[in-house]
Every structure is written in C-alpha cells, then in structure tokens.
Image (cartoon, rainbow, N blue to C red; front, side, top):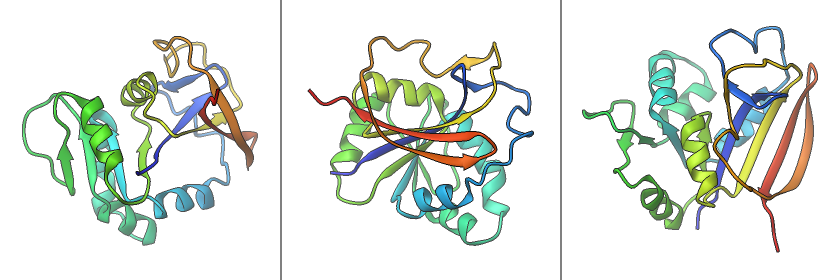
Length: 177
C-alpha cells in the first residue's frame, strides 16, 4: 500500500493561500527537503488550481528536479471537463474512492503539493499518512486557512526540522489509539 503525503506552506495562523508574495521575504533552505520528498515519490496528486499553476511552469523548466517533476505521473482532482496535458489523469467525481484505489496500488508514496481544498478532503477522510507543514514565521490575518473546515483531527507529531529563516517543517501522522 502506498503512503499518501501532503506537504503545505502555511503561515503561523494557518493560511495556505493568500495572493500576495508572502513567502518572498523568506529564503528557507528547503531545497534538499523538497528534493528528497519529490525523488522518493511515485506520483503527484494535485488539485486543479495547483496543477494548472505547475503545468504552466514545470514543462519548460530544466534540471534534475524539473526532469523528475515532469516525468512523474500526475492525478488531478478536477470538475472541469476536457483533457489534461503534462502526463496527467483526471480523477473521477468520487475523489475519495479514486485516492483509496491509488493508495492500494504498489509503489512509492503519492505526494500532494499544496492543493489545500484537496488536502482538506483527504484529511477529513483519513487518507493522509503524513502531513508536512512548512510553517513560515508570520501572521497574515486573512486568506484561506488549511484547517477552516476540519473538525476534530487528532494528529501525532512525527518530527521537526528547521529549514532556515525561521521556517519550521512539522511532520504529523494520524493519531494512534
């Protein structure tokens, strides 16, 4: 069974999406971490907005990170009709069942980058094996919060790592009884 890993950039107040360049003042040394997590993954699982943003950039990027990003199969949670390019397959309307089926296949981890709406759905249904939060040292006060629509989600801290510039990587797993 494949593990499902969600990795998110969040502010101290839990904002994951805010349309100002709030990450710009920080220069965390997250390159090795991001490289490690991408290179052990067997596929990307993305929401449609994140997919569209990535598909606009990565196909023309160069280097080994870009090569890995481009080569991985992508599964996209989307309700928009039409074909997807960039080595991607649209998930069906029952995303939870589709992801359960993907997890049941052999292979390395499924990696969710960003995709906050999808991440919340996966967390709500107990499908996330690891939640990796890159916590940036600022409070935004507004924007979409990762845990806004989640109720009672017990987690266990699996590890911490400082990434530089005050950015912490907090890794959580499902709480064990």
